Image 1 (cartoon, helix red, strand yellow):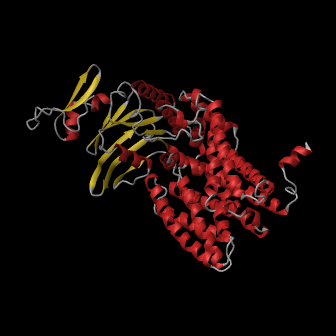
Image 2: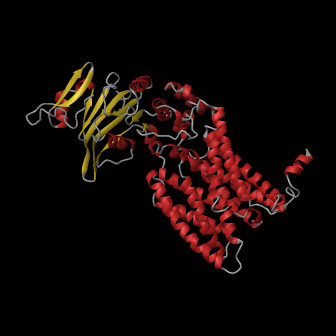
Image 3: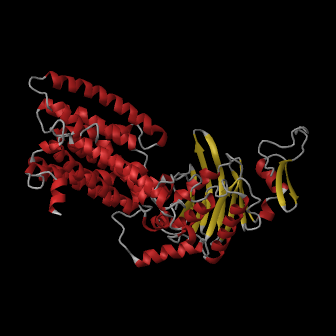
Length: 268
Length: 291
C-alpha cells in the first residue's frame, strides 16, 4: 500500500475560546472521491483551511506527500464571482494554475500550451475555453476551476461546496467528472457538501463532521444510525427512502414529537 | 496628399521642439498609465486611482510653495496616500471605498489649504491651473530623466508581478491557495499605481489624470478577452488619444473665434471618452454572442 494522499492526525482547532475542530483524524488513500459532509458550522471550511496550510491547528498536524504544499494540493474555492468584463478566458485561468505563482512575464511555450489544452479536454471544457470566464455558467466555471486546480498535477484536490450553486443536472455532471478524473489519474478528491445525496452514487468514502468531530469510512459504514448517534452525542436516525438518505434527530425521551427535525437534521 | 496633411496639421507642428518634448512626455506617460489602468479597472480600484490623482493637487501646490519641481510633490503625495490607503484596508473589498473616501477627503482639505496659500503668494497666477489641469507644453526637458526612471520602475514592477497580480486580481482565494502573498502583491501594485498616477498628474493634470488611467483600459476591456492584449490595447489607445490631443491643441491656436490655444488635457480627455464610446459600438456590433 502506497503512502496516503492526505493524513489528518488529531487536529484540534480552537478559535476565540471555541473548539471548532475536536481531535479530527482520518487518512485518504491515493485515488478516490471522498465527501466531507456536515451541516453549516460543522467545521468543513476550517478543516479545508488547515489542509491548505492557511490555518495552523491548535494541536495535531496534517501530512501531505511532497515538499511544497501549494503544488501538492489543488483547490477550488466556494465563492467565485468574476466580472463578465474581466479580460480572462478559461484557457488563461488554467494556464495561471500552471505558473501563476511565478514572477516575470509568461513566455510563449508550446509545452505549456499543450498541457493546458490537455487539461481542458480532460474536464470537457474545450468548447468554452476561449470565452471570458465571467460569462460562463456556474457549471462551466466549475469545470474551468477544476482544470485550474489540476493542471499542476497535484495528488490531492480540495473543493469547497462545489455543488452549492449548481442545478441538479450540472451538479451530477461535476460529480461524475470528478469521479472519472479521480479514477483515471489516481487523484484523491475531497469535496465538502452539506447535501450528500448528489454524491452518494460516486463517493468512495465519507468524512462526516458534526459539532467539530468526525467519522470516516465508506458511506455504508458511516451513514448509519448508531455511528451518527455516537458522533452527535444524541439519538439520530438515518432513513433510506428511494435510494436517498435522510438524517433526522431520532425519537428519544427528550425529543418533542412536534419537532421531529432537530436543528442539525438534514432533510432533503 | 501634402495639402491634406497641411489642412489637418497646422504649420510648425512637427518642427516645434515644444511639441516633440510634449509628445515624448505624453507618450511615455500615456503608455504607462493606460497599461497599469487595466489592472486598476479589473481590481475595481478606479476610485482609488481617482483619489490618488486628485491628491496630486495638494502635492503639486505644496511642491510649488516649497520651491521644488512639481513632479516631486505629485510623487510624494501619491505614494504617501497609497500607503495610507493600504494601511486602512484598501485591499479588502468592503474597506476599499471607505479607505479611499477617507484619504480623498483629507487630500482635498489639504489641497484647499495649499492652493489658497499658493494663490495668495505674490506673482503666482499661472501655477494653479497648471497643477490642476496639466502643463504638458511647458514641461522642461530636465524632467525627462525623472519621468523615464519613474516609468521604468512601474513597468518593471508590473512585468515582474504580472502572473501573481493577475491571479490575485481574479481571485485572492485561488492565489492564496497557491501560496502567493496576496497582500504583498496588492501593496506592490498600489505602489506602482501611485507612481503612474503622479506621472499622469504631471502631464494632464491632477484632476484629469483618472481619465488617462481608467478610460483607455475600460475601452480595451471591451475589445479583447485576453489580459496581455488588453494592456497593449489600452496603452495604444492612451498613446493615440494623447498624441492626437497634442495635435488638436496645436491646431486650436488657429481656430476661430478666439485664435487662442485650447488646453491639451481637454482634447485628451475628450478623445478618451470618444474611444470608450466607440469600443462599446464595436462590441455590440462585433460579437453579439457575448463571447
